[in-house]
Length: 153
Image (cartoon, rainbow, N blue to C red; front, side):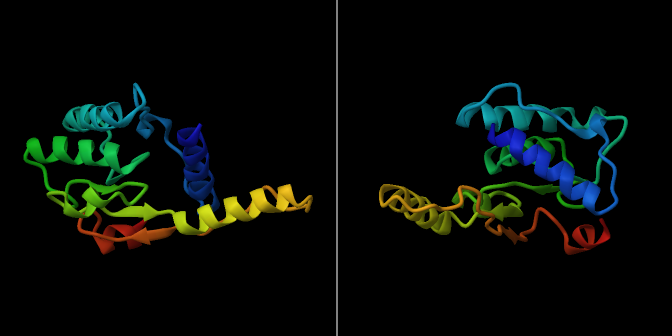
């Protein structure tokens, strides 16, 4: 479900900036779970050289998948971000210590926790609290994405 929501958000963001979504460049992870996320990202990265249409950048479902993708790209002798830029999602700690530190999107997890408690306490007290709240994530730019590529697209 989380991947589905992120995918819809990605599509919505592209369209709101006048970009079209090329479904040939959307890849789905085969399985879920920490090991499979890494492995699926790795498998997609291994196929990168054979793609007829090579994207300039990959926005990956989560940081573990992005790290698997990154390792496969590096094993093929390709350069990150010159051959392909990579952006993950989650800002897990090991992303900043990767061979090429990972650009990522950080969720405000402390605020998410705070809002969850407020919602729960409010419900227990019989208050009407909106279930939908929009929180702003933060883009953490590291070496896997050059500022030039971010600015170009």
